[in-house]
Image (cartoon, rainbow, N blue to C red; front, side):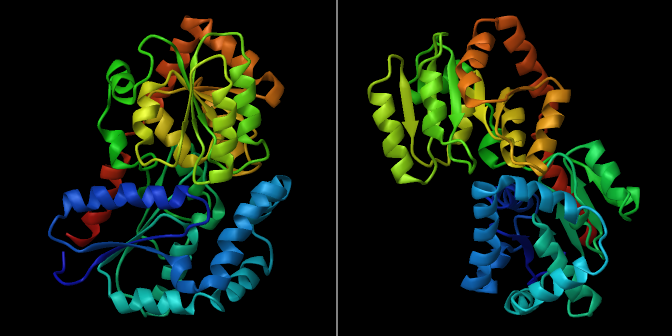
Length: 375
């Protein structure tokens, strides 16, 4: 390792998952290289407010108001289309010049990317000989996509062997692609027993706990889903994560106040791992980082309204491996969750499958294989 030159972990805040993955990698790299300066940077921050709103905000609005369009764009961009990449990169380059200058100014000895936009910028700089450091790229869904391939890149990290194989069909040699799993935040690496977690959080010790992950963007309002869970037949306590949306949290609190069962409404929390360790199952959308986290906790996911594209592929992975069920309509949510809670053997099979798929060592493996390039 070269003293005085930092390691950069680059991400883009188009959805929360890429940033969360960067946090996991950051902690692992610092643990393995405590004497080296390690920094994270959101490439959209240095690109300027207009591009950040256009790129990050455009993604959020697309999945909120036109999820079918998101699926079409995902599939369209996952195949070579004459002129598409040239036009897209040329448009991006109008806005990322400041980001490129920032990266060059830091003179890093190694770059680890958790978003394909960052990897694309770095690859362009390396081809122009403006950077002389290696880079690695961490994919953040359970299948991969053509846009993650940006050469030159020394190593790619995928969630699964399936994702690894697919990435190699777009050019990278198999020996440069590693199926490590998706990195999770450090809190998930310190397992809590269910009883210990419930005691710490003030939950009923023996009443089944359903965790509703309501902070993710989607077409079904979390208060609609919570109402279905409150009215379901099975006895259970419910914990619901409302994210940073205060208006949503107040609606959830009003529902909780009149509920016939215990309902705990959480504000945004960086202790979500404790709630996952305390729960029996989770209800939510199958974003890549959400899936990685529930699997580390051995928590089955009840999938509702996956975004067409990457989330439907994540959903397929969970369903094929027996770690989830999918609910086709919100009106069926309470019924399906009750079925599981009233069938302990079926619930246990889902929990066992989820735990088997978990990759708590992913961040450390990524850190080790990346640092190998500079040692």
